[in-house]
Picture 1 (cartoon, rainbow, N blue to C red):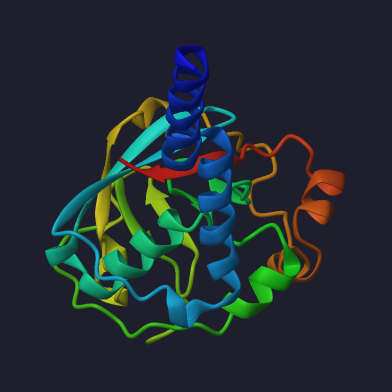
Picture 2: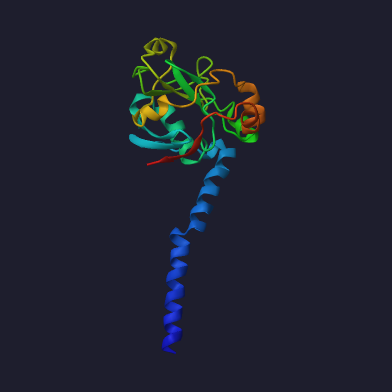
Length: 216
């Protein structure tokens, strides 16, 4: 009887671990988060006043620190995208030395299509696009969606065009500097949108990419 009770206690403890923090539970949580990528309306959480996002990439790791006050709408969008795994497996598809590196088109075409028209209004420019600062790319007023870029140098001329930095690289700028630039601006953004990583892996196999991005 005593042995049976001990067995039940052990089984109960194992069940508690499995339920609370097992790899299976973590995987289920990640799958649930990624499921929201197809439902932008569910990704409207307000970002903390400040937070850090770690990007583990094929070139190494870097950390972006976000200050929501700088660009509230951009910070909120970025926070939700990172939290739900949007940037995982995305390629650095536009790398222009001494200018900037750009990424943020999801590698799954069905997801990229959903987000292509999920535009947010502009934020007022409160910081400058200098080295290490991070802004959303856009095609005109109120057209920001998911693409972001990191400035390699002082690009403060972009400030007058409405590009509003929401964060800056605080760790690993040396990693950002060495992201593969051999393809420059060759990848076609339209084809990335419609064919995803299949197109990039075939035509530009040496592109560096985000393995995983997480909120720290």
